[in-house]
Amino acid sequence: MRNAEVADVLDSLGDVAETNGEDRFKVIAYHRAATSIRNLNEDVEALWNRKQLEDVRYVGAGIARKIDEYLRTGRLELLERMKAKTPPGVPKLMSVQGIGPRTAYRLSHDLGISSVEDLKSALESGRLDPEFGPTVREAFRMGIEKLASFEKRMLVPEAEAEFQKLASYFAALGIEVRMAGSLRRGKDTVGDIDLLSTDPRFIDAISRCPGVAQVLERGPRRASVKLENGVQVDARAFAPEECGAALVYFTGSKDHNIALRNLAIEKGWKLNEYGLFRKDGERIAGESEEGIYHELGMQYIPPELRENRGEVAASLSGKLPDLISFDDIKGDLQMHSTWSDGTAEMDLMAEAAKARGHEYIAFTDHSVSVRVAHGLSEERFRRQWKEIDRLNEELAPFRILKGVEVEIKSDGSLDFDEGFLDEFDIVGASLHQSFRQSPEKLTERALSALAHPSVNFLCHPTNRLIGRREGNPIDLSKVIEAAKRNGKMLEIDGEPDRLDLDEVWARKAMEEGVPVVVDSDAHSVGGLDNAAYGVAIARRAWLEAGDVANTRELRDFLELLG
Ligand code: DGT
Ligand code: CA
Ligand code: CA
Ligand code: ZN
Image (tube, rainbow, N blue to C red; front, side, top):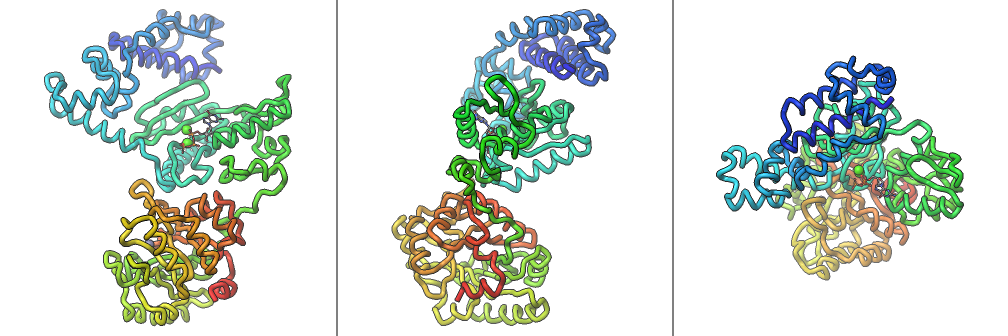
């Protein structure tokens, strides 16, 4: 069936006609005919063969002639001609929310504005004041501002939520979709969402999905749309026998794809998004990802490892790591309660952690000098411990450890003296304050905390906040070295805007034999789920369960703490 393809051509014709300032009724007529062909139950090509195109609703003699031309020649002269005439910059201007084809045409053709930057400076200089009223100008300004903020990458939970919304929309239509791209690879930030399906209705359905603000690109087997919230979604449709090859290709990363393609070339084969083929075009694999890797002589590579960081060689020699999974996690060692800056009482947090399958947790409320987070004094901690003792009796064998996220002060000393720190079950050290010191000084502070006998691990080592604050410029090689020397652990903080250590440094820690702890850093019951984001980073860092300290049973873990 080529219905969607023909409908796409007519829609494009409507769009360029509009941007070229064509008659409004013509524009509407093209789009109407497109929709009606898209929804046909019959094959448009069959109707064309029987010369019955004009029986289709909204298809008159003029449009029937255009369809005929397209089906005969594969192109439409008028469309090509009008595309060539479209003033430059129109598509870019249309990416600004509130600017449709007509306004874009007027801005570009009449006012010589051919980019978003042009529009911005025209607004600033007052050049548009005689042309548009204040409300419209304000809408342009807001649109530009929004566009700029849209270009930022998403945090994982946002991308996941978008994916879930889309997946349930398609599920309601009975269309099965698969996630690809960086979201499937578990990357710490996501640029856009990539979806695949083998359902022939897929491309049509995404263009009509609620929340779609703009169809950026559309062809018979692909569409890119922008949602009202600025998120871009790339959709591709494939035949079932291509599905595995398409998944490999669109899961990426690009570098991984290139490495695989070179392997295929070495064997005299060809690998692309449609399959793995012999020179003569015969299909070797393509239906499943496993099949592709298998035929290339490789172990299946989990998406998180597909970054061309050694996974191809490791898989060829059967030496891929047996990656940690969320179920391996037995305890969560950083979380906050209402005693400091958490929003939930300890009993609620503990129950929720238990319900998530944890065998033990540690409350690591902040220490006294972190005033913004209501850091606790020694006396307040002692009161908290009484409550922890009571809860432990109630919840046994589940165990709550008495912990602290102790502040590393600007001179490298800790908030409490050693005597008191030793009374905690577990001590994480953090560097939140005075982070404008020199890199040397910051590194020194981290090193002195790691040399402190009471400290068990360094929390979120760089203290980065993704999209808001770069991490501290500390020397992480030295930090890892110090952790190794002193027998300390380093944290992967699972908060989606931290994910700190990142995958590169977590891997380095593992290679040096430094145990990692993967924590939620929850400040609420829902925050406990953050541990899963931490696990994704651990997987991207090639960590196995044995590399992560809190996969141990409580007894073994306590032994590790010493
Ligand atoms: P993102 O969206 O920036 O977080 O990162 P990705 O990895 O999702 O990248 P995206 O959405 O541009 O493309 C999805 C995948 O498609 C990408 O991971 C690999 C594949 N891909 C895209 N462009 C190319 C290309 O030029 N060559 C190859 N080999 N693969 C590509
Ligand atoms: Ca993507
Ligand atoms: Ca994409
Ligand atoms: Zn912290």
